[in-house]
Image: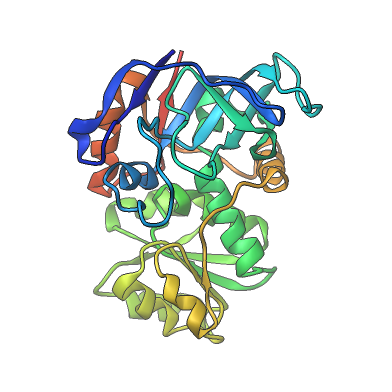
Length: 308
């Protein structure tokens, strides 16, 4: 089958496009003919070896964790899906080897859900990792509720776009940091844009009233400290970037596969409460270009990968 893969850690130059063996089907596994995926920062961080100390790697590595496609075959114990079902999922395994940037992938049944009928394969293919990160951060960790004021950093990015909309469905007032060029975009999602750097405290003070009820941090660093300073309860902070928050009562978010959470994202999308914003759509052979764009750090929304 055709796939993008790399045989050693390194920069963009290690990525190859070619033929690799088709995945084997296990008893609890579903083989999916991939129709779409998405590039996330974790993909090129794995490629560069940044996660080597945290995740076992078996070369050659086919990267990619997002998946949308059609069930090709099911394992002996699988009863949840049958051939021809349209599915999507967050295909993170216990080790890094078989990813989703390939024409076929074999994934555990536990990581899949039925694709929302309202979404195209490309739209469904960009949702799992970013959508689950947003949902788990806001619902499971921060437990956001109606009437609360929530700050989200990086509101125009891949996770931020989903986080704004999910927080709105929870009944929260949403404030989101972004560059001035993305103010209108963030407003269109239902959030109040807050500038980075100069003007941050002033605008935030005008909009948050008595203080922030919760803060979902997507960048870490100085922005994390600046936002946390305005929290009424300093433990109501969750970050995808800073693991040390756990030591001070906060929450570190590393997204987990969850069929139940995927089902909820599917419900929100079907009801029109969760929209997908795709900035660029790449072909399989263009994944190096997509990696380069993601590494630049200024992507609005998501980068989709179409796989025939």
